Length: 108
Image (cartoon, rainbow, N blue to C red; front, side, top):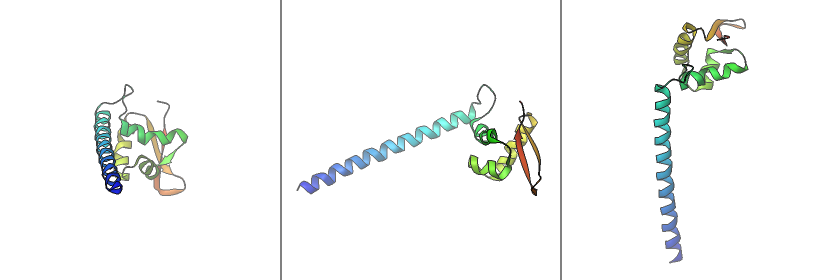
């Protein structure tokens, strides 16, 4: 009989935890959506920031930036194109791999 109560108690706790996690992830998705729609005062979206953040440590290839930001390489390329137009990054041919390009932050 004691085993039945502990099983019921464990099930209730598991349900509560599952509901709490569901609520948390739903709130996180909403927050990400709001952040993506509302650029920061500097004019960068959260996605752009995540793409640029690794460049603080030095130049990176487009592929490296995409991997570190968790996006596809073509998406990173489109985002870099926009950042190039705004003068926030430069893009040059990779001296070690002519198939790749290296992205760097500008002074801006």
